[in-house]
Length: 292
Image: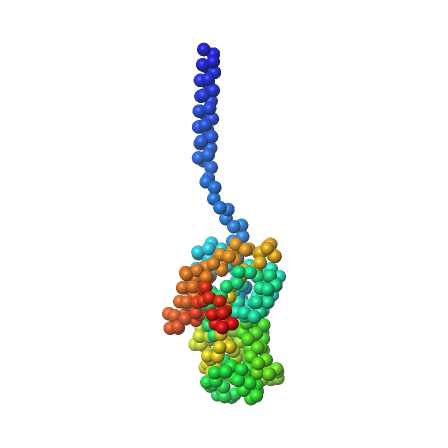
């Protein structure tokens, strides 16, 4: 009899314990993936991306889709690459393939992808003192500008545009100096405005030129040379080399701009406002597709 009472009590206790344990488990939240602690993604990008208005479309879409907050640093590509080499940003969106390649080889950046392209053009006043209008060879145009000491306004900021400009001067066997060659040390939009005010020549990416055109009196004089192709890449700053880098956020940013949604947004930028796209998307392509 005592044994039966003991068993009954034990059974009752186990049922009570089981019920309490069950209730406790039901109250617990189901296990979920831990949200990233750092929601900020710092992206250093060339000023032409900002000056062309692309960020107005891109930033809200990225933030809505990924949940990350995009912190942009709009500088010349040279400065952007320098920040990456110090681990001070999470990702890059830049346009100087040769310079990017050196930083990539050094291990400061990884996961580099071609995103889009447009081209550079040489603009100047209608008077065209150097007589470069219609030339198809950018190096020849630069030679004529130097020969005639016609005013040329340079960004002088080690940007992708400035790096290309220097390369064109080098190919023309010209070391630009003197009163006819002026440097602003500023971004593309500001440099374009200075050239416009002084009726000088300058090298500009087509997107910024189109976006700013309503405020300009400088026509396009030279275009179409293969040397003027303008390729934009994204890449992560190496979080294994720089632990403070937000690698997950950088990946989310890159994945979005390369996604069908991101590529569609980039391709559409400018169509309604200007009747033409300001960039042509290249997701899945490489520099080899353009002969580089």
